[in-house]
Length: 433
Image (tube, rainbow, N blue to C red):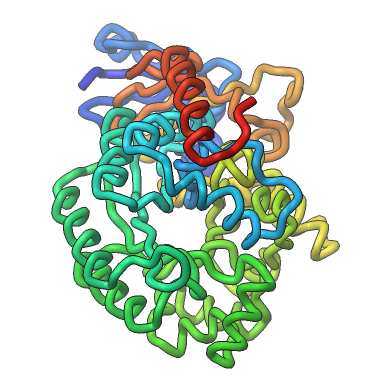
């Protein structure tokens, strides 16, 4: 592993911002953080010196929920209710996407996340037509090299259901295949309550616990979903999850737009994290999650972009600003989520400190959207976009330098994706532009 010296940057430490400091990275870990200039010995020993003048050095961001198959579905979100949109647009494309398409779509999604500074990414992988489709995503994740969780989605009710045995067998296969991979994890990914039977939910949840996997699922994203739960079970979705024994700290609740106070209490008491996707929820007209109430109750809130078909970007900075703006607007309280606290929603709780893995990003603060920088937290939360991320380092390995990823030819990837989507849309009987 190279020995890397970062100098002249504003470094976010557990004690706050260290302005004009340096960081030494060796053997994939942070070896030293200090104020001022590094010693000549450090400068001479470095394999690479990165000048972070007018930049912020901080932990890499966490995109806690996306769908990589949807990188091939951008621009198709308008004008339909969520369930109609899924049925008429998303599902037809997913049915005909090939493993080769899936590999390209995943590569594109991973590269976009890198550009936006996200180095911990959860893909709620929807295309489980064959093992090859899922393996194509894992192959892409290994090629790019960030920290990656594949939440293997499933449904055993509704259109094109899977058998419970196939679901459980494939989850076990994926766990065995990745259990020794330091940067890749598998999660149990039931799609939504209305598409999953109680028995299979309980079986997959038990399997996930046995293998120390999380369960990651859409919950209360739309009012239609809540109504279906009330009609079938007599309970709202969060209360129903609690009643069947799978609302726990290892259950990731994605969306939680339409949750009531009693449900927020259940989530808080279970210590279950909520994945907030404000941009997607707004674009689809689904509503606004009551994040201010969740935070006041002590719920852990993480951020997700959701899939590019309903966002249409995977820019965590845009998501972060939208989360702050909507939380304040809906609560009519401008003190909700001050920038220093808001930034924590995007960072995943992994601070930069000596001995920790060197998982970090360097963000340019020398642009007209933030200059003069009078508060670094505000500059990042309210004035930063993915295009301002300059460098990405994972486990001491530089994955992006000066805005260019290091492991593939981006322009060639874009051209392959453009060609693939033309053939894919023909197969799905969607008009080709």
